[in-house]
Length: 162
Image 1 (cartoon, rainbow, N blue to C red):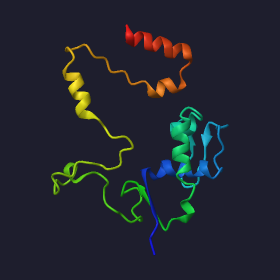
Image 2 (image 1 turned 45 degrees about the vertical axis):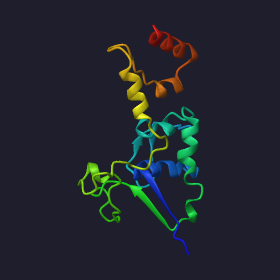
Image 3 (image 1 turned 45 degrees about the horizontal axis):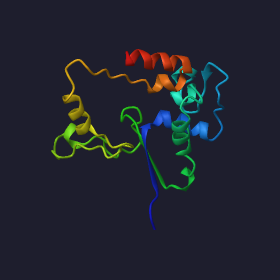
């Protein structure tokens, strides 16, 4: 017989909040500035993960993180990412960082293996190396764009373009 497990890479606290949202025990959109989630100290609404606090701001990611609990009752073990001193009574399964960044026992162990998207660092660096110094502007606006009005998006793009 197989042992069924799930490993949540975000913090235990954050997943606790997502779980209560999934179960409908934390109603969205939030109607109060102070939020009480069992097992946690009272929180300000703005202290919650952005998917919860800014409800409907990231619909695809919201669905992904909340629906990860859709079949949790079918697993035998649940593993969470946490700090040892925060939850000392919980069993430790070791850090999820590659050995090359910790004890260097495995020199080639540099990959997390948890990436949703495969980085294309080599291609990006080659492209950058072929551009004149000072000619590239990096503007990360994902969080901003998902909540910005169409006019603000347009103005931001024009600013970067010019």
